[in-house]
Image (tube, each protein chain N blue to C red):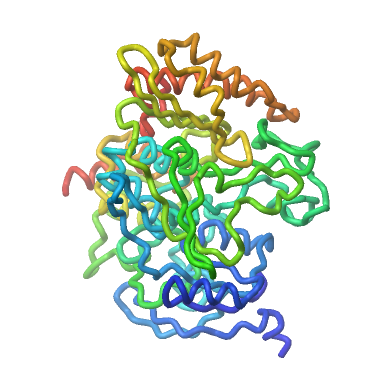
Length: 164
Length: 338
């Protein structure tokens, strides 16, 4: 009873999510953000909680192929969606080209923003709107890197563009 | 975040029915602003009605030769839509100047219209704010007000509307189509947002039981002489200190039609018909632009930290009008201001 009052009497909601190709039938508090479901319920801690208010990009994931912020996404609203996190990018033991490029270019220092940067870069490449370094910087501006690895992040993305 | 009931809307009529039956309920679409505000306990809806799956995602031609944009078109899709990029480039540029690509992928057109101010005191529930708690006072007037308004303020509120998209829509003279229990109606974009007056808790003239279903653009898109110039504290992913959307029609070097609107300076996208009228028939030069800017700023009032915005806005207007007249709109990737 106390608990139902704490959540305003809201009922849990049944939600089906496909995460990194695996389907999950979940029963969720409507308040749960996708980020918290990934991290706290599914042990997918690659997506990071930086600011938790849409200002840093560390929680970036791909929903149906589009990059979005999981911290501002209510999981109950994504019933039936296909979600890719940084854990789902490598295939058959081989890193995704963006992951490999980040290593090749040393595109991180502390690494905290990196999963979000990588998911965002995968989304950017799928969009196909960025061609120049200026355009990469502008369309990656939603991912903050406090270590300041930006030049190497741009170089990593350019490497993948050159190879695709 | 306090608890809330969650329900999905089956169609527009069902959405309107549900919200009419639940005072305290709110619609949710992209959620980029509402979820944030709920985390901060600024918004405490008893129920969320999820409208994100409603079929309001088309961009269609109108009989008048304009476009009708479904309220759930994501901001990024709209910015890159070929008809928008070609015919209404000022709207495309304004959209791309706002937020980040992740947020633009989530945010809907309807939600962008309805986003709330980022005034720090509106977000901080420990401080008085007439917009959040009517009658409690305005902390910004004597507080940290660098981001706040210089035009159309009241003693009750000096918040600004944070949208970039709406500034371009004001220039394009868009209409907002809404559905309510009594049917549908259209509201001119310039009449959609309100000035704070003594009711700053009301951002818009949308009624609590109405749903935004579309935004309509008239045929005239100012695709040749336009710009969206946004001045902010960092080059991207920041709200405007001052922004200016411009649409001009020139005949030779003479201004035939002039429309311009400011963002970041008022509780709504700011247009001044007198300033625009003063430009018609004039040569498109810096002298005319400076006079028009002075008309806009005649009643501007700073509050200390934001007083610099008055001279910044004057220069931004002259620069933006010059960019539009020259046919060299501000580029959003290379931020050098030409």
